[in-house]
Image (tube, rainbow, N blue to C red; front, side):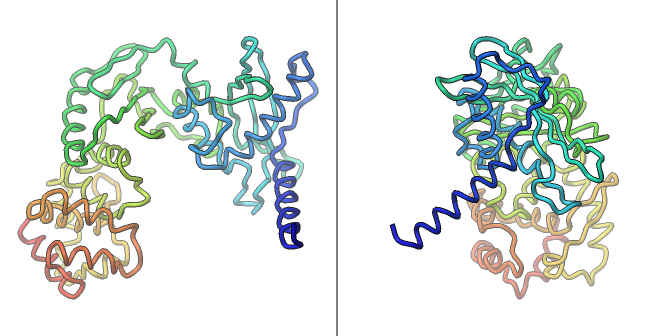
Length: 388
């Protein structure tokens, strides 16, 4: 081994050692750990390793219980970067403490982990998580308590979608959802993808299911929706006054279905949003209602330069919520392209890549599909607006 290799290895070992020390779990002397000291050693070693590898992409984490991958991804997403304090500019300000350990059976342990930082002698709780440790030979794998928390829930399955709920479910709303899902899936050519909904009253119930006892980020917040995907399976946990699946957002449904075939980080966001506005409206309003507000608030000014708007965000409001003007322009373009080229043309524009300054790839693809160039863009957008 040459000197360069030795130095590289030494740096890697030192970095890992430093990383391990910052992630190592701190165990209070009052915690009732298993009596078998070998089991304790294995559990702590596996847990320390888990607290490091949780930062990896979820599908690369080898310490997750494989049979509970997707539900554990929900928990892992909440644990990533939990040590950091932006305010104090310290990447390892919050330290992990084991606050409870309960033996569920010979091979399973319930763990509570709290991340706490000390600033000016004042303790600050960043988050507290619940994790299930599963003994496997001389190591442990980990999972969210999600499936244990929902094992007695009722289930309704239609086509490739399953709804989990506690008391009752709105079957007419489910039919409406399935109809629109089928419409989107036909466009996106989605097959053999499964979706599981878990219906909760609010974010408090949602967090408890997943294993998030507390997280400072959600202090005072009442609603949220969390989701995760593992290959062909997507899980969506509704915590937005939706315990009986009484409502869903067609706009967000478009994004959910698209994410099953391509990451939303890889598509062009303005085009993606344009599709969502055309097919599902937004903020509870139809496309026609959104477009009317757009014309009254933005397109009423004939001096508006749409090419400039594309580079500098300009918003208008509906029901108190912001809407990006460029998203509406892209909705008009989506409508034109689909009429002339079919959805295959829309798919091509969707996949020009993420938004970038200058939008050269976007304009090149748009010209090929429609004849609209960067030079005549402003003029042609006004024509689309006037003819809508």
